Amino acid sequence: MKLDVGMLTHDLKSIPDYARKVEALGYDCLWSSETQHDPYLPLAVAATVTSTIKLGTAIAVAFPRSPMITAHIAWDLAKASGGRFVLGLGTQVKGHNERRFSVKFESPGPKMREIVLALRHIWDSWQNGTKLNFKGQFYRFDLMTPFFNPGPIEHPKVPVYIAGVNQYMCRIAGEVCDGLHVHPFNSPKYLREYVQPAVNEGLKASGRTRESFTYTTASFVVVGDTEPEVAQQKQAVKQQIAFYASTRTYEPVLAAHGWQSLTPALHRKSVEGDWQGMADLITDEMLDTFAVTGTYADIAARIKERYTGLLDRTAFYQPYQSGLDDPRLPRLVKQFNG
Image (cartoon, rainbow, N blue to C red; front, side):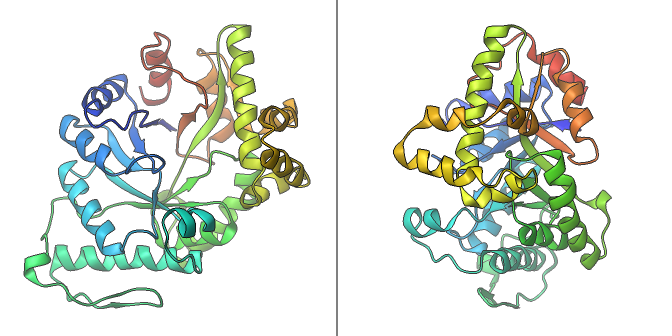
């Protein structure tokens, strides 16, 4: 299992130092997300100052951009990085699509599938000179003149991952994608009984095997060597679990353990702004189910024990600050990627 890291800075001036540092520490992939900033620009900067670390989006929101725009961005990043770029896409929820991005939210599963297929058609046109002729339910691409064609690149097979929580999206990932961004709010039981069977259906439909597919996530971790350090992090992780569990989108994760009735109570408290009350509803049993707790010396072994065979790569999803200058970090990273 590989250990990755998230892009904790989106200041384009500070990214060169950050990217060099995480590469030197031995992380396998640097993931950039679409929250407060564009997810692609930081990776463009990172690609020019690194040589070995993979670079990917986890995730870029798919629907606000035309697949043609996404295809151009991914092509340029694949070329600049020497084939180290991974395109990770997600749907986001209806409210954000319609009210934050002002785009139509319709049939998210079929539309995402079509985006992935359209990207592959566009890239094939650029790489091999095939006629662009893609016609789907949501998109049509049949015009590509030489003036707008960037031409072939050395590493044209851009891996495409999508984010999925429900079984329909997981099946699409298995059918048309190279990997699945598993949501950080997960458990081995949810992965084993809910996610993997759906992905396997998709893999079977596309005639592929598990070995050709990658599961990646960011795991909730409580890692510390002192009681105060662990106590502080437990509270922060409970808060994050409560935040996700308050949304119906993530009910399947709770349902895998019979805890789906918790969602309405958490949602009520979120509407009231009672963040502390939300965290208090998350029991120690729930924390142990959705997060991994350990010291800096044994957290790697605990994560591997829990997720080997279920995940191929992970990062530490930490709702608390943990700097890259911690002297305990290099040894921890080496336990994964050394």
